[in-house]
Image (spheres, rainbow over the protein chains, first blue to last red):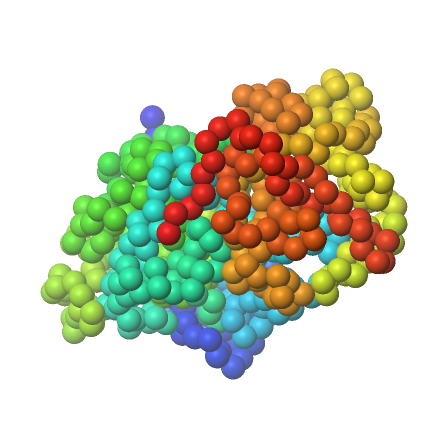
Length: 406
Length: 167
Ligand SMILES: [Zn+2]
């Protein structure tokens, strides 16, 4: 039986700033713009938003500042520590805050100068901080960046299942084609498998340069309210069927302690989210699978049952995940090509897809008129998608998930 | 144990950090140590304040053989740490120690991270790094008094076929 809160809450507004590597302004200014755009998208005034949630890694601006700037008086606000996989989890927290009566409409934002201020890759400011605690066991060995932290799991995957660099490259190839129909995307040029394989190694054998996501400056916002309120707002309501997060595997902070180390948090989240939604992987029309690196996509498709464990390399290179395929993934280009914003942009994209409002190069996209001619400078709207899923990657140790329907 | 500089990093290892100070004290004596639960007797890694198998807060550091095999690896070509730039490409290995493999669950192992180094404590050549290769702990004494545990190939025959990435 489906969960009692299924379809009781909706995403009613989305908005974002430009994806760039030179924002030239504060995270405060960007956060305010993203929240304002999401309110405008929903048709909400600041007086009708009474909740704010954000997440950060010591690199953002708190909700109280954003509320003050926009004339929002929150009945509930919180700034949560976290990066990847926070997006879906905060959507769940927003539902909880509304459900218990702390507020009725929550704007969730993430604002980061992820290129010009605090780089996620660990270069610059982060790398020079003193080392203490459990980092004493890693950073003195030259292990610090997210890629290095995740790499052991995927080297093992390549060994155990024969997954190849060519298969990983296909994730980038597909996402780059999707980005080529996304005017917002920071990298719009389609790339080939050879381009990926010929780009320099970052960490061997798991990632060349083009297997790694972008680092960008941007802010993003998603507004959640009850289905009852959603029916009176500007956009077609997008219903939240189920949410889970941040769910963990055993030893979440030390995910190498118990084999198989290729098993990620999603393994434990999958049965919970599909039971809550009352659907299975075969019912999902489009996916937003967190692409911090091409291999995070492979590990998550396997964990959530879109293919068998060990067959993720085939799944991503089979044509299934591209526009026109059976279940397109990251139709905006995702973190690999659109911009990096810790999963927010992939939820925003799925909301627009479910509305039929993918902002592509079709002249009539605002009215939902699309050509369905996929390719550079063309359409990227999937034909009538009904159910979308987001898989949020935190680390091999934990993640989050979200299922939406129109 | 106070503060040490290594490759541009400032390492803080205060006495009160009982999760880590003992590890480096044993390393100074050229012994690899892990934590052992004083109630159920199980070894654990990482060395946290409680036993993840019985929640006992009573523990001791206990030396282990330092022998094991490479369970996974990565070769870092692009480092984010400026002090490691003269080391690239360098291997980081996940070593599964011989002690307590598959106990208390079939998948559990004491899996420790370090660099794979040669006899001069330089990064081991990439073509010699492989999953399944037998290794032993070696101890890199720094002039500032800190000793960093590392691993090196032991030359023992592997128990399983070696695997390394083919380009
Ligand atoms: Zn115990």
